[in-house]
Length: 143
Image (tube, rainbow, N blue to C red; front, side, top):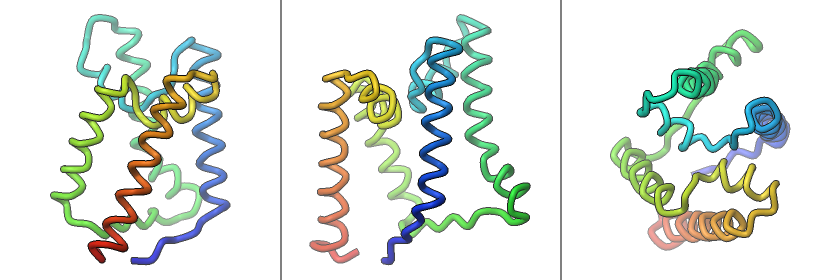
């Protein structure tokens, strides 16, 4: 399995995520954690909060359309693993998010930027786990 190195696209994506996180904090006083935002769509107690969350999720979902308008083609999305593995990984991440009190974007981007010790520990934990998982899958299991 080849890993694509895309420094300019990655830099642009990271800058946009950082800008979105800063704007959400500056304008609404909210931390941008994608999983927390998505999970909050299941609660309908506050219409303004729900509308904000829905707008953020809609913005994330329409990214490929913005790419299409900018380049004239849809982005190529390759998934080198079976669908069951994607679903299983998503469920495992969901459990991890509930135990960690936030997701990779909430801890890794916003929490670390605020010098949160809890976010630093969470980020080190999920990055170490991700590195170990990739090593085992690629180099021990040979997948």
